[in-house]
Image 1 (spheres, one colour):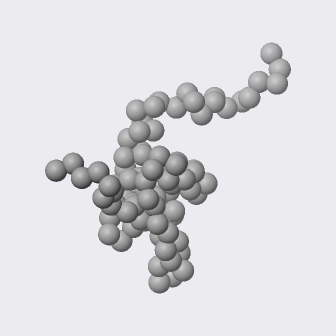
Image 2 (cartoon, one colour):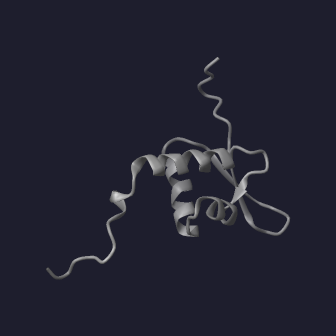
Image 3 (tube, one colour):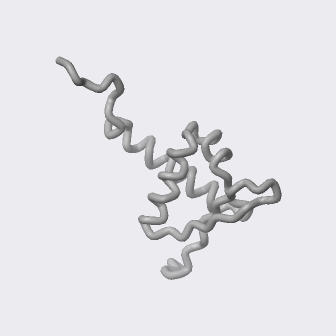
Length: 88
């Protein structure tokens, strides 16, 4: 046929792998020092726009992600601890 995309649609990516990467992303953002887009990208093998989209996704899911600048002027993201629902 023609007009067919050469690349497989993103939806075909294994969902479990995606959720594992999301868990790793959350783990990096929960560290006191936070994580930069570059660090997350290196760790997860994501391009910067993918990292930013994932962070936006976390915000939409109700996570409070803060952004600040480190000493080199690089944006560092942190995940604020969720205090609204203590599970203890």
